Length: 93
Image 1 (tube, rainbow, N blue to C red):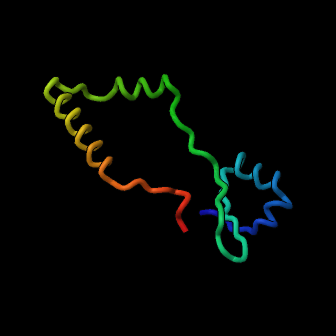
Image 2 (cartoon, helix red, strand yellow):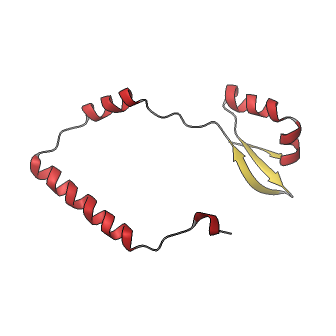
Image 3 (cartoon, helix red, strand yellow):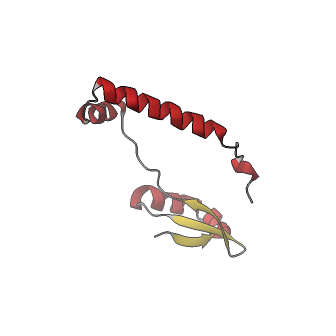
């Protein structure tokens, strides 16, 4: 669960809070005028290329027919996604 603090408090003790995020894994919701405006949290760590390759190697292999079906499913999904209107993420209130 994230702690809540004001933007002003974060600015005053920025290094302290960044250290808490970095070394303790804490998260913070920043508020301005009693409204949440941002969140500071540790980034999720992804897999390295080598780790990802090992994941792929561990997956079951598809038969040629299954691979063809999967390819058609992907093509159909792309076609459907292209029919959706483009959404501007910066144009949200």
